[in-house]
Each structure stands twice: as C-alpha cells, then as structure tokens.
Amino acid sequence: MKTLARATIAMFAALSVMVLAPDPTSAQGDRVPCPSPLAPVSITRGGTTTATPSAADFAPGTQLTGMTYNQTSNNRPFRDTIVFRKPSTKLCCQLNTLPRNGFYGTLTVTYKALDPGPPGSSTSFNDSGGLVYLGASVPGQSGFIFPQSSSVANNQLSVHTYYLSAAIVQSGKVSFSVQDDSAVVSAKLEVPGGCCLQPTTTEKGG
Image (cartoon, rainbow, N blue to C red; front, side, top):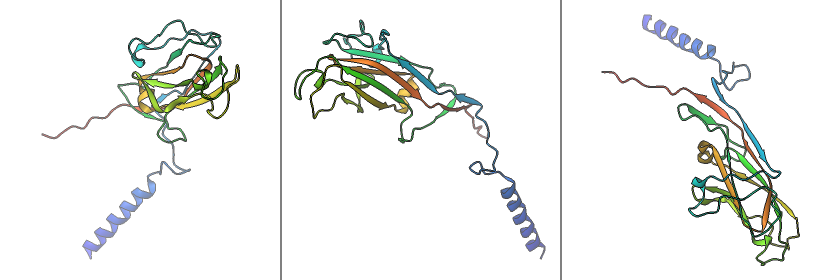
C-alpha cells in the first residue's frame, strides 16, 4: 500500500509540474522577449547612386568601376554590392524565414531596357541578370530579365525579386549584376531579421 501511495503522489506531483509549466505556443503562455534582437534590414538604392561592387563576389578581371544606377548608355554592364549589418559570429542567431521556405531575405531589382529589339536579337532582349555570390551567378536566382516571348521596347521596365540564402545573409552583403544593354533603376534589399542568443557550454564531468 505504501508503495502504491508513493507512486500515486509522485504521479500527481509530475502532473502538477506539467500543468504549471506554460506552453510557449499557447495563446495564454508568456512569451520570452529576445535578449539580442537582430533588426530587420531595408535598404533601397536608385537615382544616380554610384555602384560599389565587392571584388570578393565577382570573377577576377571583372570590371568593377564606372557604373551608376539609371545609366543611359548601352554596352555598359552593371554590378553592385549592398552591404548591411550581418548577424554576429559570437552569438547563436536564428534568422526569420520567408513564406518561401529556406530563404531569409529578398532583393527586388527594377531593370530598364536601353537597346530595344525583337526575340533572338543581341539587345536588351537577351540580357541576363541576378544574384552573384563568390564569383558565380546564383542558380535559380538569375537569368533573363525580360520575357523571351516578345520584343523588348525602349525603356521597357522589368521587376525581379531574388531570394537570399542563409549564407548570403550571414555574409552581410548582397551582390548582383546585369548585362550591358540594360540599366538598373533601383534595388531594394529586405531581410526580416531574427533573434540571437549567447552560446551555452556543457561542462564534462571528471
């Protein structure tokens, strides 16, 4: 009987702990504020801003000077790198993901055609652009900037949103480029932020 009574008391004690512990996913549970919030990023470039591409993201020998937003002459490539405050390397940071799972930010670029032409022509029609990282175009986040089914008109606009991987966000910079018959009107970088915590250490017993 004493054994059964002790077991019953222990069971009720365990249940009491379970009931008293708030569920962090419950609407009634108290949310713990992030001790080191990672602020969201929102940076827009445009006008006649001079591009400042990072050599680390482009292949050796690539032209990296003399480029501006809203350039008016064709046969001039465009490359730029937007630098922002990257997550701390001394903290454990959880980045907020986008609805498109697996990505942690966006770069929205507006392009303008400077050399109109029909399908198949070596004009703005066949210009490619998109994200560049560590010397190469990012698969799935680069390609033709104008529809390939119809002619491209002079000054025609095209807007593309590219999605950023965790590696790009953690680098603290986003690089992109476009070929030489199109201008970049504007570029907007958005990173939703996250939360950082102090890393914990586990002591091993002797």
